[in-house]
Structure formats: structure tokens, C-alpha cells
Length: 335
Image (cartoon, rainbow, N blue to C red):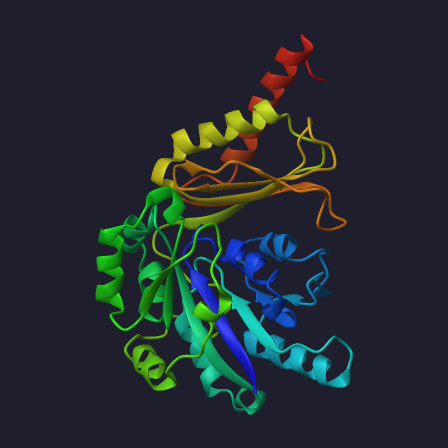
């Protein structure tokens, strides 16, 4: 049996960071990672992997696959290709859900499909909770509450920044009193603490207590409010000053409506070394600089998930700020 674990958690809770760390552990070599993202372009896949193919071999010996439609079909196709020798063999599967995903239909699909059950067994449902913003997120978003309620294990992220949040711990305990709350600093935690198997009977009971929100776990669902995904793409580099001013202006203008921003950015002053940028709510993280692009696509790609923000606004705001910065630095008008 191949163990299958689900890594879930609301937008910006640190799922991709955790998985990137896990894959560096020798014990997590030969792992297949299935990535489900909510949006028009896939960034998490590119951040985990080294190319933009549907299935790629990672330098750790792991695999990375992007869900295109149906989870069960994707999982069975991976298994078929593994058995035929078309792809390298793997020993476990990690499924990274979108931050807006409800894990209930994902679990339902894995538990009820006979073909999946022949060769796979659910190991752990791991839910990440942001120590900085997690309490407010649970209050505001039903998706976050369902993610916590279905967890076998809860993992607090960003405790190095926010400390140990007692109000968040109390809320999590009320939603799921049986799940242990662990802590990770910058994604660092021993894998055996996270994925050691869990009680399937208790998991089934938690699942039975929650109604399903969608028949297909990866079909579009109607989220509370007017949550939308906005993509900003650029072929030419962006000046560092323009990028910083734009992020600050977005945070100030959108406030709590800005749920998540993540991007790979080519910066004028650092050619060939893209920056990974993150914004969660009002918190702008320091950029992480890569030594090179993770795929052949070297364009700037930024995904914004926001509530009641016009789709045109972020792109037009960046255009205006970039034009002003270039005019100021060159002393003339940009053509």
C-alpha cells in the first residue's frame, strides 16, 4: 500500500514552504507530490519543482504532478505510470490542496473509490494554521474551519514571528479536540512527527459530521463573499523600487480584502535571480532570491487572491507605479 497524505491549510499558511523543506529530507525521497492550485497559472508547482511539465522528476528524487481535473484520475494515472516503469517509482504521495479547498470531498473521493483503495491508504491529514493571522482567518472563513476540523494533526506555522497564539490554540481545540497541535519554524520540523499514520475510524467520524460542499473535490466551488483570483504577468523586469511601492500600495488600499499574494518576479537589479514574493493579509514578507529560474518560463507571474477587488486594479496600479519610477530614475518619459 502506498500511503497518501493531504497537506491543507488556508491561504498563506505555509504549505508550499513546508513541502519544499520535507523534500530535502532523505526519508522523503521517492515522494510524489500532487499540487492543486486555485487560479489561472500554477506557481506552487513551479516553486516545488524544477520545470513546468505535468509530471517532473525533482532533484531530491521526488515527483511533482499538477492536478488538471479529477484527483482520483490523476492518482490512478500516476500509479499506472509507476507500475509500467514510465516514471520513477515512488513510495508515498503528498497532496497539497489549494488554500481555499475543502478537504472533505477530497477525503470522500479517496475513501470511497475502489480502484484507489486497492493500492493506496490515507496516512495523515495535516492542516497548517498561521500563528499570525490564524485566529482571524478561522473567524472569517468557513473553509479554514473545515480544514482544521478534519485534521489528524495541526501544525502551527510562523511561531518564530508571532509566538505561541493561545487564542488560536483554543479555537483549534474547540474545532478539533483530538488533533495534536505541533509547531514548525520556517517549515522546519521532523517529518516523522507529521506523518506517522492516524486513526481511520476517528477520521471517518469527523468526515461524517461535515456535509460535502462539492461532488468533485477539484471542481470550482462558490466561496463566501466575492473571492477571486487575479493574475499579473510581465515579460520585462520590474524595478525593485516599483515592486516595493506596488506591494505597499496594494496592502494599504485592499486591507483585509487582500487574502494572499504570491509571485515569481524578475527584478531589474537582479537579472537571472528571480524573487519569490509573499503577502498574507497586511503582512509583506521579505523576498526570497533564487539562484536561477525553476523552469523555462522566465516571465514574472504573480497570483493574487482577494475579495471584492476589481480584476483590473492590481495590473493598472503596477503599470502606473512602474512608469513613475522609470521616469524618475531616467529623468524622462517612458515610451
